[in-house]
View: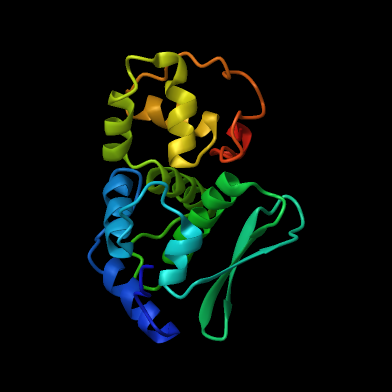
Length: 206
């Protein structure tokens, strides 16, 4: 089991602010690089990048609970530390996406975050951060290359491997100019595997 990167709230704040201090700007143009640097900080070497485990290494508490719609997740400061609540009604992929979204909001709240973001811009970047950290470009290209001979399975297999919804995977593949294949599950609301769930933005959830 991966050991914790920090042991108390003060150490977490120093770690996050030190990380953010390396950037003069955070926005759509460098979000992929920002996300991968953060993944490196977390030593996130495995796919899927599970926030339940990785956020625990930062000492950030995660709890499933009942949230009032339309909230899927929210973060708070409690006892000097961070706590993220996510809906107990969401499946694993939806919860993963929501937790990474909230992690970006925590980063954007820090005083060393280098860019002033309007609320809507912050929400868009938080969604993209979640998508990028769950579906990193390099590993996704490698996995996709191994499935090009069987395009009918490409979309569903990749979505399962990376722990995201079919819709989220399709959108990410298009962002990276990768083929999406022709899945027999395309167009269905419910994915064929219990590990498949939410995409971004709200209107594109699977």
